[in-house]
Image (cartoon, rainbow, N blue to C red; front, side, top):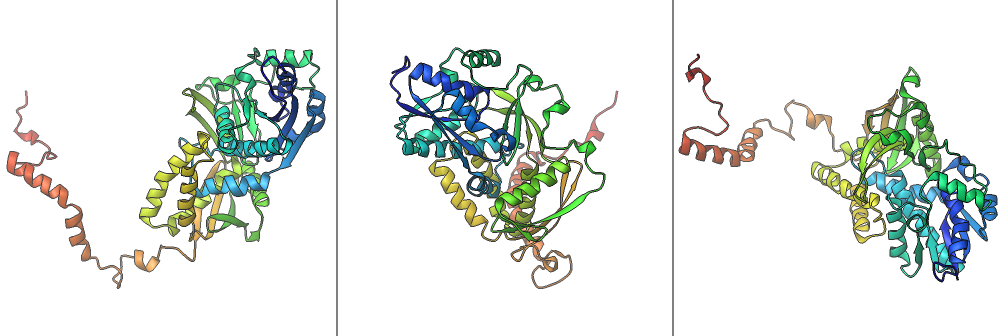
Length: 421
């Protein structure tokens, strides 16, 4: 038994970075337990290189590394896109969607291994601690949760590097690494360092995925995305799976400098935080999906869906993925997407996306209905009665004002009656 209490075996959400590498020996030293590392491949690329060797060298008994990219896109990303969920107007929820999937598989591995605890490397000031731990609670509340950042004496990157060196932990971090980053198949986030000053423009070295818009090609590029019931299926007429689609869209977006967002967001824990995000393919996908919904959804459904989208985004951002409300909203969204099938053509140019064409067999837009010509569907004379009924409440209020004061409250005063000095 360690000094922190009785824990026999813990499964750690492991990225291989400085923090989680240090957590492995810290857990063994303070809890006297076996440590199993869990890593989800969500598209981090080269960040996954050498993870097994590093985890074992840090003191872990074993490590699970699973490719969850397709599940991430199919069960988390695409439903969020179909919901139209965007947090505080800019953030496309890349990290927020990833955490519940990682935590879900972490719990499943803990159950498989007979572990009695789970651990994560999220700090006590951020959102990720909530996302991990709400998922643990929703899926297996019997597991003990260990959050080292809320317990240990390490308070800085310098402290962590010193601890790693003292325990022979193989990490490559240096004090020059000033940004805190999170990367997956959907996006890359950047925080800390010079970005903590909201007046400072992000330096060029902040961005990793995208070309600077001013350096993007001088000629626009057109691309077409096919959707079936809200789900992307083809690019430029070629059928692709979820991973291929995102690889293609990420490449296109990165090439044309698309998907950069710089925002000061409201964290769940109560403080504001500045984040810079790169979501090249995701930004294209959102624009295309919204363009198709414009012609496939009726007015009432589209407007109500926009209201639900904000609530959906808040649930995802706040770590409430595994909740009845999120599931209920998904059911609503699925109904709205039943006829969101068709093609969208987009123009990509120096950081901008323009929807230049959309078509669908379920389109509610009819040129013969929208024309101002005379036909059977719309008689312009009908507008007079509609306007009278639509404006009836305003008319009644104005009549009451006129009877009381002689004029509507919105009538401008007659300045010609005032004397000039």
